[in-house]
Structures are given as C-alpha cells and as structure tokens.
Length: 319
Ligand SMILES: C[S@@+](CC[C@H](N)C(=O)[O-])C[C@H]1O[C@@H](n2cnc3c(N)ncnc32)[C@H](O)[C@@H]1O
View (cartoon, rainbow, N blue to C red):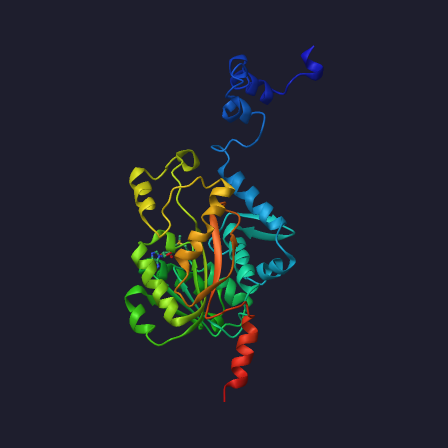
C-alpha cells in the first residue's frame, strides 16, 4: 500500500525521529520545536548561513536601481572571500549591501563629489571603498585603533587603484588631536562603532566633529538586548556584560519590537547630535537590523539645503 503514495526514506526518518505522536500532542508549545523544523525549513540553529543568504538575497532583490549602479561600480568586492549570493549575475555580500544602503541615505541628502570625508572606526574599510568607488572625493580620512588600521590599509591597498588609495589618510587614535587641530571636513561618518566605545570617548569624538565637520552621519543601535535566545550568549557572560556597558544608549529593549525601537529614535538623535548648532536633517530605520537607526546632521543648517547647492554658493563668493 505504501509503495504508491508513501513517504521517501528521508520523510520517513523525520516522522520517526521528530514528527512523532508525542511531539504532535504538545499543541501548546510545538511551533518552536524540532517537530516544526521538519515542517517549516527555518530551524534557526541549523540554518545560520541559510538565514544570512536569504537576508542578503531579499535585500538585493529590493535594492533601488540607483543603488544597484552604486554596487556594480565597486570593483574587487570578492577580495577576502565574503559569503555571497548571486543576484542578477552579480555576486552580493552583506557588507557591501549595507554600504550602498548607507550611501543611498547620505547621497540622498548631500552632494558628495568634491568633499573631504572623515570616518571614525572603519573596520576593514567597506565604506571607504564604496565612497571612493562612487564619488570623486578630495580625501578620505580614517581614524581607528592600530589593529583595524593595519587591516583596512592592507585591504584598501588591495582593492583600490593607486589614484584612489592615495586619497586615504590613516590616523591612529593617538594622533587625532594633533592632526585634526586645523583640518576641516565636509562629512564625518560613524557606522556601527560608537556603540562599542566608552560613552566619554563618543563625546570626545562628537566634540571633534562639532568643531571640524559640517555634516555628520551615524548608523548605530538604538539600545541593547539581553535576550539569550538570539545568540545563545555565545561569547559568554563576560562579553555580554562588557557589551551592555559601552556606548551612550544602554537601555535594554526588545530589539524586535518596532514600537520599542521607534520610541528610542528621539534619544538616538539627541545622543548623537554633535552640538547645539546642529540640526537633524534626516533620520530613520537602518534596515535590515531591526534595532539600527541612522541620522544625518548638518551644522548651522536651519533648513535642508542640498549640499551641492551650498558648495556652489560658497564657490561663487570665494575670490
Ligand atoms: C564593529 S567595527 C565596524 C566597522 C565598520 N564601520 C563597519 O561597519 O564595517 C567597529 C570599528 O570601530 C573601531 N573602534 C572601536 N573603538 C574605537 C576607538 N576608541 N577609536 C576609534 N575607533 C574605534 C574598531 O577598531 C572597528 O574598526
């Protein structure tokens, strides 16, 4: 009888091991248990890479035409062997998707060609790579800790041509005050790094941005989480305690509750406004991570003036 419509050996095994009478009897709690992982395909423990790839795929599918152009302009994204999917013939990884989404937000507000940019905490340099591939910047300054500077200088030297690489200035933290006593910037950037610094350090950087820059973009979490089911606190209790202690926004929230996240937006904007002369020109959810927010601030900008227009006006009055 089973030969005609019966289960495959695979399904028969699932039924024997997971979709059992005992498991099926637990109607009040079965949905997040192995029985349901043999019905849906989304077992979170067994499918980490599947989830990442699904997320990257969905982001790639929803990217605007303009951002697809931005992404395609970035050569050598495959250096370092990132985890990629292929979309419309193009290899796509999470880091550069984030980078073009960030650039989309900033470039939607201000003109970047001809500007001098300063990034604090650049990691391996994906943002620098993305900006230099897409805009004719004057200079790109990176302030970072020594280990990351080593990584970003090696990476950026590999992925950029000589002309673009020559625009980058790498600044170790000990040289910041001296080197930036007089240098002015058009745009300061902080992406996913103020939240891991001590709050006083963040304030010191914000003071420097207040004095030296005209625009400031930040993309960071609005708060902390303590839900062990999200990551199993995989790095141990000590790291959890350390993570809870850093940054200016330390309230523990349900990071997958959109209302809880949105309610923290005013505190986010307040915390990262570099000083009283600054206006928040735009802010909003920084997808895909539910609890990341982004904001662009302008100094002495009473209204949202296109940056290109400001540069044009200034050039007109310069002798
Ligand atoms: C999580 S990584 C993010 C890197 C990059 N912005 C990105 O999103 O890919 C944090 C970065 O901040 C840097 N960082 C941490 N503390 C710092 C400090 N006190 N001063 C400057 N950079 C710091 C780290 O070295 C690292 O480059």
